[in-house]
Image (cartoon, rainbow, N blue to C red; front, side, top):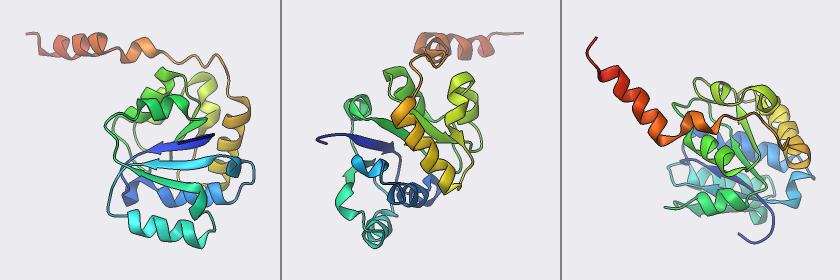
Length: 171
């Protein structure tokens, strides 16, 4: 996308709570200086496009579709968001942090709270709290810390593989 944008990489399904993001985005003049790019496909796409229209933001929301290489999108985003109600390992969140893109996330079951510690915990908000999502997004765009304390080594592929293999060794 051209210009500044906020990015959410997630399947367009109810559990990912895109509606919350659309409402938060629509309610902020500061956020509307950026496009909102939704990367993914899913059964909620038609509904979300209609919601964007009813909120008056259809021209500012880009439904990108599936992308085999979202890293270039993540790298150039002003902000990456995760507003899901449940995650396993939120890979898009980790990838954004590794790349150096500011992030906000909801404190959903499993994942974000274990990743967003220290200075990052200020950008972790309750699931479904639209005003908190909006405020965290505005804050992250304007004053995300340069030093977050994020431990990227923890997610190194060789290190993770070695940890898994250690569980397979006979006791």
